[in-house]
Structures are given as structure tokens and as C-alpha cells.
Figure (cartoon, rainbow, N blue to C red):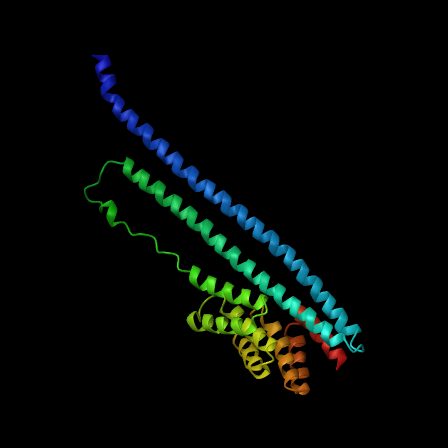
Amino acid sequence: MLKRQAFCQAPGLLGALVFLLLACATSQAGLFSDDEARQGLADLRAQQEILSKQQQTLDERITRMESALQSYPDTVNKLDTLSQDLAQLRGKLDVLGNQIDTVDKHVHELYLDLDSRLKLLEAAAKPADPAAPASGAAVAPAANEAGAPSEAYDSALMAFNKGNYASSLKQFQAFLKANPKDPKAVNALYWVGMNQLSLKDYKGARATNQELYKSHPESSKAPDALLNLASAWTGLGDTTNARATLKILLNKYPGSPAAAKAKARMQER
């Protein structure tokens, strides 16, 4: 009689064992994906730190050259080359920052996915509740649509880094038109101005950088926008407004890297 009862209870024990194995396998799969995402995030941040140091070195070289070498005939060409290198390095840093944001979102999504799967397994293990809605009626998580704007932004930056300024300008303008409220809209506006300066469209660069500074004075790009605005005024032959813009930069953002460049430019005028 006891043997027969044990045999009858075996299927229930077997079902519980299978359920536990499935839950463990699902959890481990989520953790492995999470570990890979975290390692990728660490690698990107290491690259970002290296590029940040390179940018600081270039900033220092440009400042020294602006303050000490203005009397040499070839200084302007050297400064233009270094400034272009610095702009491209900033573009690479911007791309890395965008990639880090993407990996952060991916890690968060992995946690949400794992949590959802565990809840489904827990619900399956509980007795059915007649009042509860059917499992098929559960609300599906919203699809991640952030990839499209991010890819468009990265593509525009890659074009700038390759020196394709006309293409980069069109892509950033299209990005701003399609995504005016995107968190990277201010950065995109900055790169529009950088492309215009690179193409020697000084009127366009003047308008773009004025818009950036007036609309987003609290942005980290605002000091650089003023510096680029001064360059646009210089390109237009208006040294009076160029000098006035540099003074605004020094007064508003005295501790910024752009202010150090403004001081060097003020000394040479």
C-alpha cells in the first residue's frame, strides 16, 4: 500500500524538479548576457577615458601654440590642423558616449526580461485563479525604438570624423528635424555648427552657434558654441564682434576649456 502511494506522488515531485531546472536555466542565461553587457560597457568606458586624455593633451598643445607661436608664418595652418584633429577626437568621444548609453539600456532590458520570465514561471507554478486574466492577455513590454535615432546620430558623426562635412551636415540637420526633443539634439546642433565652420559657411555657423548658446546656455556645449561663434565672426571679417564674443565666453564660463582658448586668442589680438 505504501509503495503504491509513493508511486502516485512521484509525478508531482518530478514536475516540481523540472520547474526548478527551467527556472535555474533561465536565470543563468540572463546572467551570462548581463556579464557580457557589463564587460562591453567597461571596455567602452576605458576607451572613453583614453580619448578624454588625448583630448586634454590636444587642448593644452593648442593653447600653448596660440599663446606662444603667433609670430610664425605657419602657425595658423598648424593651429587649424590641431583644431580639426581635436574636433574629430570629440566626435569619437561622442560616439563612445552614445554607445555606452546603448549598452546601459541593454543591461536594463536584460534585467527586465529576466524578471518577466521569472514572474511567468512563478505564475505557472501557482494554482490557476479563475478571476485572473489569461496569460495571453498580459501586456507586452514596449519595443525599444531608441535604436533608430542613435544610429542616425552615429552615422552623422562618422561622416564628420571621415571629413565628409557636407554629408555630415545634412545628416545632423535631418536628425534634428526628425528628433527635436531627443537628448542629443543639443549635441547635434553643435555638430551642425562645426560642419558649417569646416565648410567655411560662416554665416550659417554664426546663426547655428548663436541659436545653441541662446537656447541652451546651461549645456556643456555652450562654451564651445561661443568659441565657434567667435571663429564665425572672424571668418566674416568682424573682429569687433569676435572679440566681444570671447569676452562673453570668459565672463560666463571662466573655468571651461574653451575659456583657456579664448584667453589665448584675446592675447594675440
